[in-house]
Image (cartoon, rainbow, N blue to C red; front, side):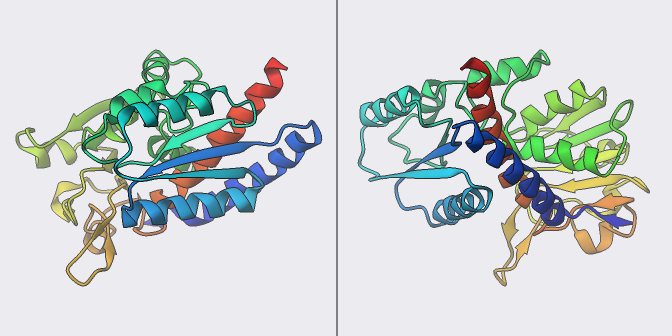
Length: 283
């Protein structure tokens, strides 16, 4: 069994991106990310701080827009439109969740798809589904990069995803199909889920239930990717996979923390640099 070390891989990718940013700045392109956060969700504040640190490390400029939870939908949309029109901003990220009084789908749809570094605009979602170049949602992109960097074959393999969220599960289907995997997706209404997961060469858990995937759900020598981040009763971070027992059967497995999480932020940084580079191509 080998640990897929997302922390180390993300560090390597950030180093490569830092070099790319230096080259862009030599050509008078200063990559810049704008992050919008609505309300005072504590977890969101931690995520935004981590993104800010990653930007600082790589040399990406960072501008934060902290909005009161009482903001109107019109005010939020107007801010996004303003950022769309700003030449100095290459990437726009709306941190979720946002208050229930606001329509997050309309907000995502308003972000210019050329600045949509989170990959949530329907244009990018559509381009991914037909295999065109686009911004890919950062967590699925991180999973694919991790498999590639560890030379894990995807083509022809049976991949099973547990979880069908718009952020992870659904874009992962397209990412894996584009790499010629045979893909099955399981969700809360799936019958006999253990029978399906036991057929997976690559098993990806992204459902948000602590230690849901047990040893008897996994085929021997399967590659197991744990996207889940949960806190147990002691407040410790755990994934969707029972790591201690599943790791005895897996050929490769990601830990939590230190697996997919760091890759998500690395891929966000990658997307911001990609957006800045596309600006260079159009100049």
